[in-house]
Length: 210
Figure 1 (tube, helix red, strand yellow):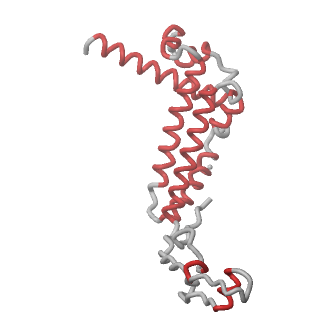
Figure 2: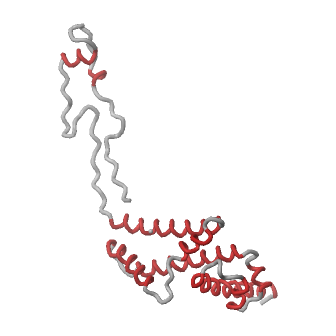
Figure 3: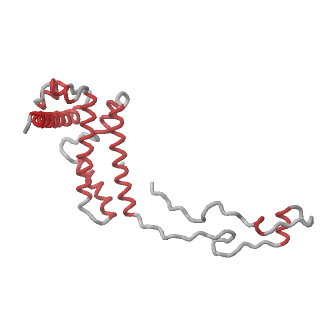
């Protein structure tokens, strides 16, 4: 192994040590009460190396939330993938959430907690929170879509016909009234009085509403 590869490996190991310490301390004690000295003490990574990896504390917080998001959603997916029936997979999400809530040391949602502390001052934290919540919403929405029966296709209703396929009735008197005052002798052809469709006549399916 050359010196460059060894240096990169050492930096990667130090980064993981710092993130492990940050995740434990930030989640247990809150972000604003934990300083870089605390991270140094818990991780064993020197301050010089810490600031080399994360020049600002906000960058460390961002990396902590990003890594936690990947791990959190992976754990959820692994649990849900243990089931095949679409409806049961939806229930598995809430089953897993219940297990997570019951874990020792559970202190709520890390992203909501972080937003409560830094949402007003850190765009990076806001982006991480929105990304996590959006990904969870999309995942759950996909499970719901997979479990929803497909509606049968309903053919379009031809122009000028009612729901049961009957053409509308137009009398001569009706045509006269449509064209002007009765008895004036003014008449319009069928094309002038038959309704013009404003779409294809199909019915749009309802769109289902972390």
